[in-house]
Length: 222
Image 1: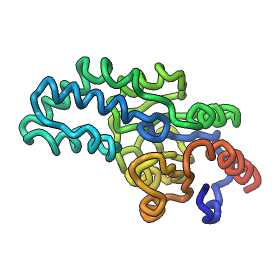
Image 2 (image 1 turned 90 degrees about the horizontal axis):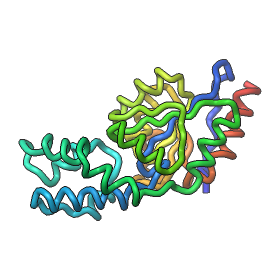
Image 3 (image 1 turned 180 degrees about the vertical axis):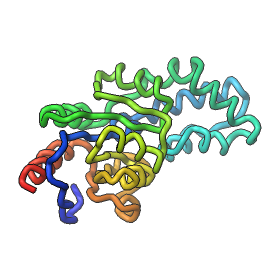
């Protein structure tokens, strides 16, 4: 169920609606694909990696995760192999699925005359591969940004709302002065997300279109 906390009062509708979405575990369930890519990286490098543990904490930048498995001097080269070359495109795209409500949420932004953007910590070309494979078509995709750094892209695009699953996404929304809508489909539970400052907490994106319609109606009336 959605959070029972009062819905924040939105600013008056003086600009077109723009909604930002995180990617991993917000729009897409990338756990099977990321696990497959890490297994391939493990096989190639001979480094033991617990892919189940890896996918339990998706969200922060790749290098933070790789630092748990590789010596500091090898993290950059492991990241290059995972990200830039064939490991991720070959192993991670096909197994990844859209999360429930993802397509409908992006479509609802458009139905209300708005723009939907994706702002993610993932390497941007790989993010675009995921979205194209799943038939999700945002108006813009910005990659390689995490936590407060996401606020830069959100401000640039004039986003009033940012939707994510991680406390880092809440921090990004707050850095941008955007409303933070959090979903509990990732590694952070509702209590963690509220403690980080989320304005709204939803179980998943199936609840988002109705919330967004109410948000826009409030903006119009403000």
